[in-house]
Amino acid sequence: MTLDLLFSEDALKLLLSLVMGSLVGLEREYRSKAAGFRTITLISLGSTLFTIVSIKLGAPNNADRIAANIITGIGFLGAGVVFKDGLTITGITTATSIWVTAALGMAIGDGDYLVASVGLVLVIIVLSLFEFVQAWIDNFHQTRSYRIFISINDVAGLTGELENNSKSFNLRLDKRKELKHHEELVFHYDVSGSRKNLDKFNSFLIELPAIKSFEC
Image (cartoon, rainbow, N blue to C red; front, side):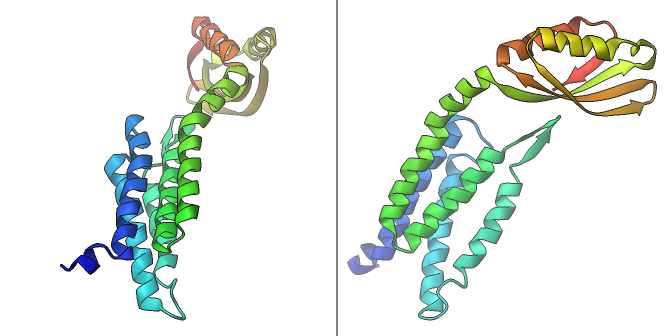
């Protein structure tokens, strides 16, 4: 390996991609996400490498023929970290982290170092600092989806009690649907309000003997 090859611009692109990808990966690893340090770093590195190869093979008229397919591959990886957990979906932020890390790698591969650097700073800000903003907003207002199981024999008047108590907790209760499951009725509600009042509503549901179970 000659010094010219070792210190070529393409080699430096790969090293820069390694550094940028590892910085995003460290944040994801710190939060114990499905796509952590090594995964995110390899995504950045692979995107840069594919972009470099695409430019070389496709020059001068079709430089994006390989790079264009990176998006398809990243879509498969992102789908693998999105899971349904009860009534909620988890992993979407991790999936978007994979997507944006690939974009950073492609920018480096194309030689847009300023764009990649600014993009990295913004990604770190969104993943770290914006979490505190999101938590602050959730303290004041959030919406939870509830699935409440009630025995058919105990349902009379209970829906009215739920609505009245939600108002006493300063919550908004919206019924989405009502289903029958064996000897139970299943109510689906969207409940909106502050985190504190939603937690009070959970305690209220736990203490109601007519409610067999619920999840949110």
